[in-house]
Length: 306
Image 1 (cartoon, rainbow, N blue to C red):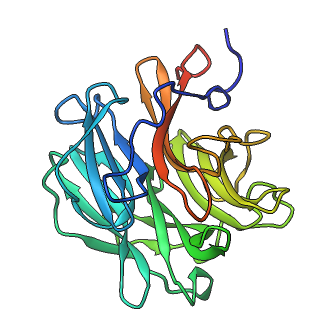
Image 2 (image 1 turned 90 degrees about the vertical axis):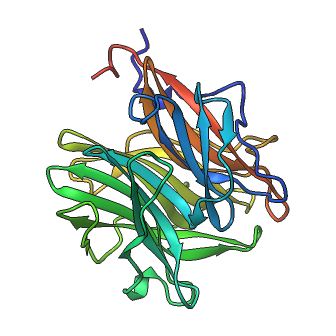
């Protein structure tokens, strides 16, 4: 019997990458999942995005996916959750003057969505001045009501000419659609001594279990050779605000070659039958590169079945 925590046991599925960018684009990423046990039709549903729009995919096994029509609406970096019989899709939306905020839409069937409701937008100096942003939402429900973890501000990665999030913070609300009250400060920030987040805190997906929290973070860092990178590591917290490492290093990291040669980031973890699945996207290079979606799997044993 494997006695290691489940998050140390993730292994890439042999079918990876499982979703390629649509024709004419070079990026598909930021997967968020509704597994069959939660979906209205007992199928897998995946929402992801290209550079500016969210797309919908459906699958019978969570590995082989079919795209459902064209883009749903403008937006990126979604997070879908089901509460009280309704689905809520939180996502990053484009505001005026290069600002980015967080909006939510709701649905009963994952196909027809309500009009957007703006939940957060940048207002503090640390949330960015040149490219102000509140981004990468992750919604969590617990004894505290509703929490919305989000990324803020940006750091420019000059070897890729893209921007990635600098900070992570959180806001709380009594109702799923707000209003949300910001904590008002970062809870995760880049640090020169942090090998896997020395450029940016990136983004986090948080899962509450009782009174404890587990966070899957994709920090942004510069490696020993001076290249920008991202890898997925696991954090733990007693209150969801103060975090510490739960694993000695990344649980999924870039490889020396192939479809995940440069970055591994933007994820969702779901439980299905006798395994956990971690869906994520990865980048195969720097200036000229393609981003695709893959999945890693960890078996559930006696230690992880609670």
